[in-house]
Length: 273
Image 1 (cartoon, rainbow, N blue to C red):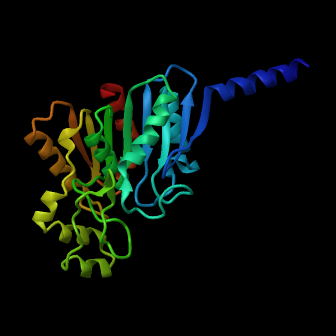
Image 2 (cartoon, rainbow, N blue to C red):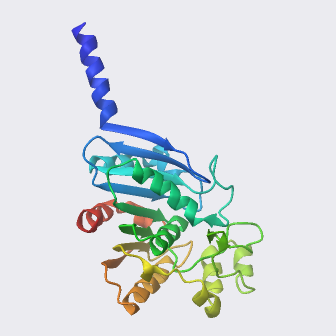
Image 3 (cartoon, rainbow, N blue to C red):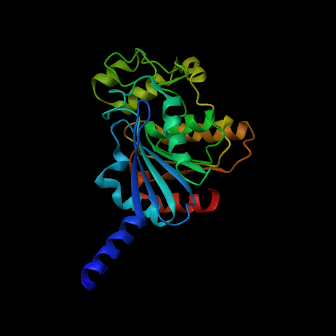
């Protein structure tokens, strides 16, 4: 009887330490992981062009647990490629993503929101910060400085919308087509960015954010020129005399290299979030 009681108490404590809750909101799928201690803030994880809810997978469990161990609630959020979200990364409504974050925030006793996004999720993190003043911290891994087309077979629509209106994007031009046929994605992006007029119209207005910003990239990124694009974000923040802390860390490595350095992310959160 005593043994059964001890097992019951152990299971009760284990459940209380880390709980999870499914968030139901329009065009998204999300899971909220919550530690039992007083919450320091809500961290939102956004995946990239792979789609689905990568941050809710077993692959990222050890990193999720580190956030929880540091007393952050963690929201793993799918904005396309999951059961209840759009099938493709195309015309994703930023307001829908923010609403899901708001639902999670209201479940917690915190007003602090940090967004951690990778690749296209990094672009979304920067866009969320540019539209919503209650985003407290932005961490963008291998990000773009502009909006690109949605991942469709025609590439004629924007990746993102706001209020139902497509955000201006850098289109696929003739110079990019040969590289796309060769599956040389980085060269295709570089060719698209030769259209300086489209680039100017499609810039993510990071200067509108009210949060510290950490950018991390690999200087040998094979997918896109993320190091160069992150440098452009830094220059834009400087040009607008951005009043919050911002930095760009370049690593020796590929598109996924920033994911090997969560120690720097945790340090950034500790210092600026």
